[in-house]
Length: 201
Image (cartoon, rainbow, N blue to C red; front, side, top):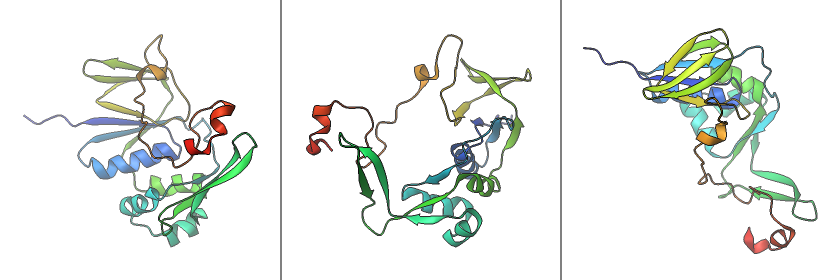
């Protein structure tokens, strides 16, 4: 008896959605992948910057060099991140990558999505997700065209919080990733007394 394929759905057509779809294409070659997004919904097409983890990942997944990314997506090298409106005086703070040899990329997000799409092996479903319903054997996608699809795992990469089960918000089922390194970025609003103490950062 043949074992059933693992079914994984990735939701969203922005950078996060295509990065996830490309990663699962590489990491789960035997899984059934679904990439679900509504082509009528616009994406936030802005320039994006990365941390130094992205260049190595991008080359591993696509086999493309920085030179190719620069040509196709207008990519430039990035050695740090500048935060504006920092602290009580509204100044700027530059968090430089360390060691100094590390670099990230800055690029046109819409162009990078087109490049990543060439490296995604997934069935694309052009539909809007109406609801995600958790069940004992997985997660059911309920689409606006009436389809209901049961998946083992769903990765929601749409840019804003969405409703999941009826009466719940996505915050009820979000797994917090507090371990993500952020350098000296402010993660939450602090009182003026805390902001005046640089030793906290």
